[in-house]
Length: 214
DNA sequence: TGCCAGGCCGGGT
DNA sequence: ACCCGGCATGGC
Image (cartoon, rainbow, N blue to C red; front, side, top):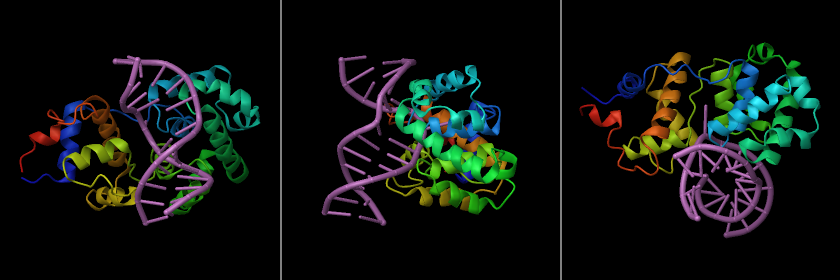
């Protein structure tokens, strides 16, 4: 038996069970969350999102119209609040001007072009773009993050200094191109990275990968 | 207490 | 093409 990527996935899934990501209901909320969670724990993002929710601002136009300073204040718990207020505005402008704030419209066109467009927005990089595409749009783009690199480089399945595209390619070339799989696999990686293969636990001893036979 | 968290940008080499 | 400093709160 080989440690194929799919078997690694199953070992995570067996360990944690289904995670049903993204932790957010509407596509719009997911996209906002994807920006807010940049280098920030999800706990803090939840506070920011519930502030927006409470003020009935989880709608494109309403969120775009609010004063940037007030927005920064509302999202304060998620950290980098000045930066992220600006980034949210940048995205909302694009979203309103091109799709009238309709995620259905946004995801109905060519996904590769959409990814390029998203990357043109100041404040949206590869991980955020792929998170939006995968979790808000159900498009098959594998999300790579710090956890992914940490876990897989520890097992010598990628290198620490590999680029985003290199790691992403490793996954897409070794997995069936299925949205449900990409979705669940990344969620499993985050769960593992948060709770088991942490920075403080470099041995990663109970990582399920260790229990797969060579 | 200090370190870390589901990045990204801009400026410098 | 990399490399680095800056951005900032809350949890453990």
